[in-house]
Length: 154
Figure (cartoon, rainbow, N blue to C red):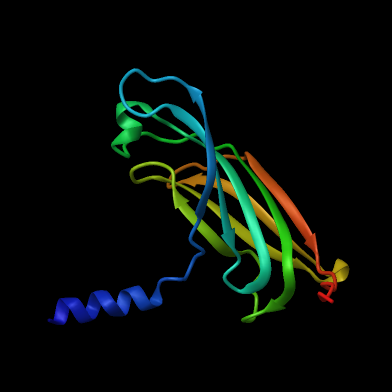
């Protein structure tokens, strides 16, 4: 019982990240055994900023290793975030706060999206990049959303 309490306590300390919703995918390389290599498109809502949705495209390795979750996905990713409703801050924002994270290899590699707020220009900036425990990748993509009034429906 004590172990269960410790695990539950540890889970409460873990930051909350957005969950991605699959939008679509295209095959890029045919694999005879296992799933094909593909590019997947996913969407997630910023957990602390209502009215913002980010769309992420990334490579997903197929084959037997990919099907078993043992393959390492490439570091390249693309991101486009958009205002989809009135923007409001649900909590205080932290500079460079991680809003999305996904494992891209069995243990050592992750892809994450971090958020910045450019107060001078009243703009939210989202950066996607990949890292490893030992060495990350300089490949990245960025998108920005100017915070604008949202038109009300008649």
